[in-house]
Image 1: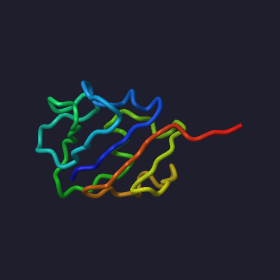
Image 2: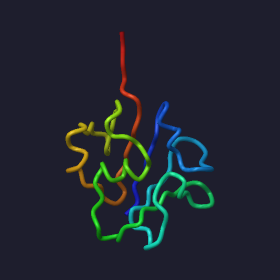
Image 3: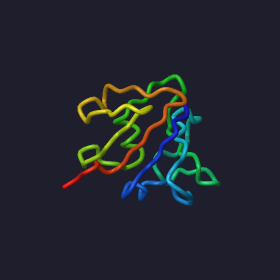
Length: 109
């Protein structure tokens, strides 16, 4: 299962090592033994692989954990264009070709 992840603002610090830009592919169906975490980038810095079976569902909280992002911090989360609230992270199952955007919340004042 591959999920396109876009990180905005200060969250670009969670980009896989060696990545350019603010977008990468999170591969939750990587073969067993693959590394977990933001430093698990492929040689081109585009893929982050999780040590899960391709048939095992991954929820949003698990993906954030793999990236090292604390879900308790202020975070604007968009999944396929829809805002996901913090209390739904553990129940929001991700699917192949999902598009996830993570960024600091928008503030005005």
